[in-house]
Image 1 (cartoon, rainbow, N blue to C red):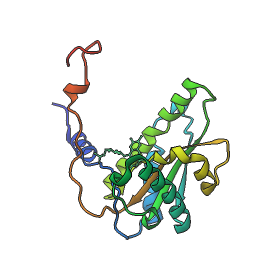
Image 2 (image 1 turned 60 degrees about the vertical axis):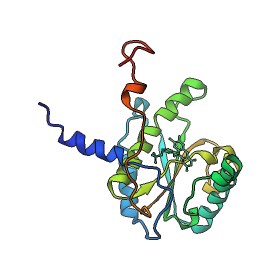
Image 3 (image 1 turned 90 degrees about the horizontal axis):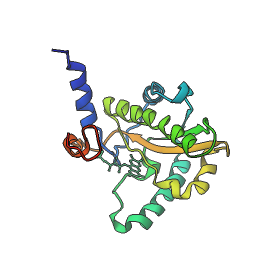
Image 4 (image 1 turned 90 degrees about the vertical axis):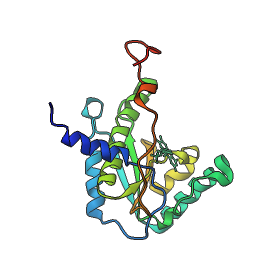
Length: 194
Ligand SMILES: Cc1cc2nc3c(=O)[nH]c(=O)nc-3n(C[C@H](O)[C@H](O)[C@H](O)COP(=O)(O)O)c2cc1C
């Protein structure tokens, strides 16, 4: 029998990785922030280009302005049903994940770019979870990206993929709920049951 001890640890970590939107006021040290970013940089990327760049945002006014854009869109999309969350200016750290357009233009290039960023984002989320931190991947602000980019000083040459609030969770969250494998997996051809 193979030793599945490490796999079990990882499985548990992944099962408990949740979208955390409410945080305690306690700060998160730069050393820990750097560590979760390092985890992100362990990810694969097409041709090992490593196109990711990270902006660590602690400035209260920048966080407030980013949060205002995020909230305005939330209200527009969900009305009063927008997820309850800590105001971004009170979240210790926001990490913006951006990149160069490393693979050129067009659909295939954009697919390669996204596929070269999100494994790193997931590594970051898992590392945060392993450290006891909470985080949530957000993209809702995309609808107002032109308004948001100057706040990050982003040049035209850079793509913006995710903004991730990070802090200590306000409470413990249980395991996530996901569809069973048998519902989303087929054998040999689409539609053939697993
Ligand atoms: C591509 C992507 C975009 C997301 N955008 C947002 C967002 O803009 N705001 C937000 O609060 N959560 C966002 N989420 C978090 C999802 O809502 C969350 O992962 C999902 O509801 C599952 O939550 P759970 O892991 O706690 O079960 C996003 C997740 C992904 C993968």
